[in-house]
Image 1: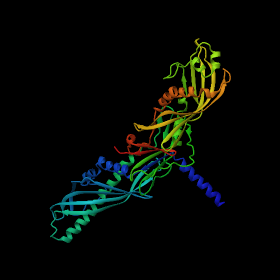
Image 2 (image 1 turned 135 degrees about the horizontal axis):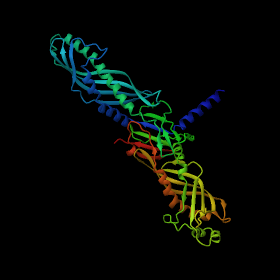
Image 3 (image 1 turned 90 degrees about the horizontal axis):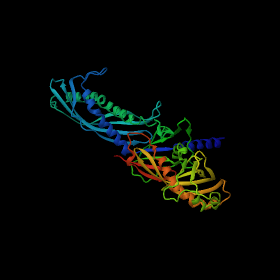
Image 4 (image 1 turned 120 degrees about the vertical axis):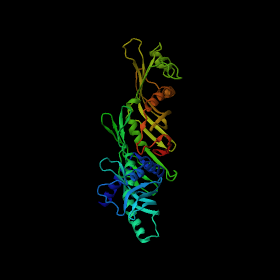
Length: 455
């Protein structure tokens, strides 16, 4: 019984990991940039300083100090470090001058240099499902204190007064700054799980699998993307036998986004109908004229049935969802479907006559790029893998004789059309205002990895 329970639990864990679809490894480079930007852009320390002298409900005035003001706030220096299993330890080094009238009746200036420390725990918001930073354990540590008060006069009294004043003023003044900065950072996750369109065919949402986890080197966010057709049906991600993993050769502190082949497959399934193609032009790229005369070179029976050349009409129908496969350095898009050729009739309103219907399986090599924060694909024909005759109105013929003809047709006619479909691009997760346009792309086993770069 215990063995069965263990097998079931292991299977559940494996499925959960395999179905993640996308992984974000958030390194110190981006995290430090965003926290520093939040501190600078919000001007939170200056705002706190401006409010320091104002009366606030529930806050008692400090005995022996009146008309308190804060000025000359130093530009903060932020130091972050990961706390495994918890989140991020943060230290903000800054300084300021506190002024006012002291208990001895003179104008007072206290210039302090201090460190504000706190642990920013990474959580998952219960209501929104989004990542959430929350500070705890805020402390203010004095590095140095200088004052214009006469320290030689009653040094114990002055020292006690300074100690009491600073311990009352600084935590209430500075610790809210940490919370305010985290509010600013948390807002940059707000659009992460919003549905993003893939053309007119459907949407993708980046939903979290679980609460983000923290190691000594990064925060990892696992996604279970929801790929949904326009009519509302969800496309399930295929289970990967081996869950894709990040390579080990990225720089310490860097950030990466991993997109699994199964996730890209699910997204392209939305475009399946768009990969169908009708071609009735007699001139296609560098190909010979698309007529029954050209076709008869490969199938002599066509010449017997059509002594006068007729224009060809070609229909390609993709009858299985496109599939993306990846191995190190190479990615392929597999397409299964039918190719049917017709002889056009000259009389208007007359339907073309089917010559033959072939089952085809071919694959395209994919080149990936990023533009406007969307993943784009450009393809080229890799191989025509199989060709088999289903029906024929011109009698039996050997399909292999058509291999070169069909291969050229796919390369000249189908590939441009497929690339036009793929121009729609696939949306990338919207987090922390990330700009993906500088990312370096790497194809690994069963996944595409984007090494994220700052502007």
